[in-house]
Amino acid sequence: MLENMLKGYIPTWKKGKLPTEEVKGRKEFYSLDAVKQLDSYGGVLEDDVIMIDVDDMEESNLLHSMIDEMGISCNIIKTTRGKHFYFRNVEITKECTNKTSCVGISHMDIKLGINNRITPLKIDGEYREVLREVEELDFVPRWLKPVRANVDFKMLDEGSGRNQALFNYILTLQQTGMSKDEVKETITLINKYILKDPIGEKELDTILRDDAFMKQSFYDERGKLQFQSLANYLKHEYNIIKIDSQLHIYHKGVYVRDTDEIERLLIKYITNSTKSARAEMLRWLELVCEEYKPASERYILFKNGIYDIYEDTLLAHDPSMIFQNMIPWNYNPNAESKSVDKLLNKVSCNDENIRALIEEMFGFCLYRRSEIGKFFILTGEGSNGKSTTLEMLIAMLGEDNISSISMKNLTKRFNAFHLHGKLANVGDDISGAFIEESEDLKKMTIGERMTVEEKGKNPYIIKPYAKLIFSANDIPKVKDSSFGFKRRMMIIPFNAKIRHTDSDFDPRIKDKVLTTESMEYVILLALEGLKRVTLTNTFTQSAKVVKELEEYHRTNNPILDFVEEKEGSIENNTTKYVYRMYTQWCYDNGYNPLTSRRFTLQLKTLCSYATKQTRMNGERVQIYVSI
Image (cartoon, rainbow, N blue to C red; front, side, top):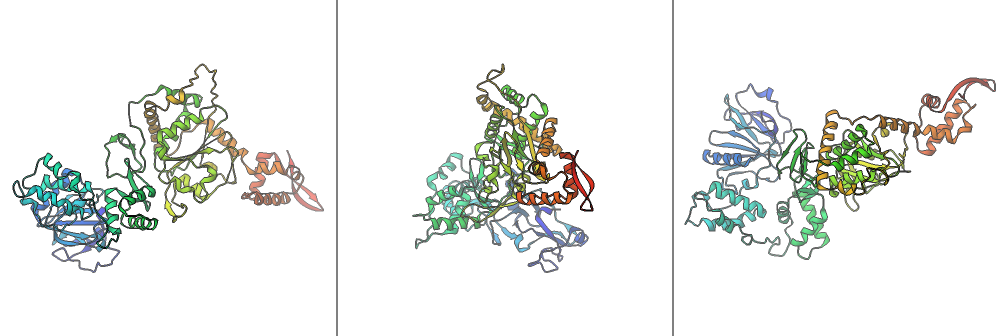
């Protein structure tokens, strides 16, 4: 029970609160099976869990009803005198007893999991009643933080100074580090749940007008900047968090990694701002801002809601769900576009499997995981719709969600960080390039953690999910003799020939496939493609793609280059001599040589050479001969 908030279990004395063993500094505890037969035991709270103990039944019932109505996710256990409420916590660092919260809930004790605090679960043979158990705990609301205040809102009604008390309380809440929105929320909750006689909506709006809030100063009486106070204020006022240990700020519905934007904010609050002061402030923000995990990859953020690909439903926007990417279009299950169908049929040469593969590539870009481990090369010469297809992809994803680094530059020292938080990297034409296998390129393709670096900043670790997409008239050769890298390559041939003289030629097709109507339809096709990929963990197979891959693997084999370069030096020479020549050639050109046995087999299979036994200088040797 309640495993999401416990690091283990511990035997307790009969009253239930005190453990029979030392817990301070302890890391390992008992399993439930080891203690469940005991008369008394408790659970040891996880480090990031906070217990709010409201030691009064009336107060605890009030908080319980607030939590229910607001849809806050927490565990609740009934006690003899009240209730225990359990949340995730990163901000409250001190325990306290018999305090009042910002929202006016009193008789409140706070216990922290970081101190190995115990919550009684079974006392003298009786289990405590679990009133609510959830899968995932929400963070403790800021209005539950303890506050020093001498006002009892439960006793205030009309004529008792109620309005003035609420007005004065604004400053009290601001001094706790609450943002303006958090102050407004807290006082609105006090009015709704705590006041003996609530005031009307218009009166409340008057109390909470903007000029009621003091412009906060973060300098002490000596004129010294209070970095910690300002950092806490900015964190809450501007929704600054950390993702992958990097500062992100909330902007237009998503969290973006933009320290320049944060520095521009600092100029508003730091008098005669200097670079060193801003740098110090950024360090403080890194200390006080919490690390958050983005929402599950099953959820995709659109302008009009959050789409769940597993349940095929559109959910309402939820501020508690952390996203780094918003698709700049609405999800419309009824969208249609003849222009999009026409283009996709044309560029795929009416091959259903090729079209399905293109749709799956689009959908794969919406998915913030990459374990399938494929990157895409769109091939074909001339006017074949390749560029228009890529423009359609970029438009669907949105410019903010892509990077455009060439394959050659991706693995250079200061470039990989551009992939952080992007859905796709749509690179330049790589025709004529020579691809070198690299560990970083592999990590980018399969979404493994990798260290990246920006100029002038410390390296940090990311787990990229951007899909790598390139175009090429001719597929470049890979400087690697294994098929591992080539296996991660997904070739999509664009063999169409789009001519002005075609009867179905449409000079405005590019404009038509980039309209809102078309984008909403492209999204539907992409989502269906993504569902196929996630269901089978693979992409649609096409005979044309398989043929091109096989031909590519054959022509890309370094042995063919070796034979072409050394053609006159192979026939009638000994196998040992030719193999030594081959290994030296591999070292000179950066390849890993095959074993002697595999080398001979490749010469026979690809180059029509056979081995023959003969005598040279009185010795029996093997030589290569043409067949």
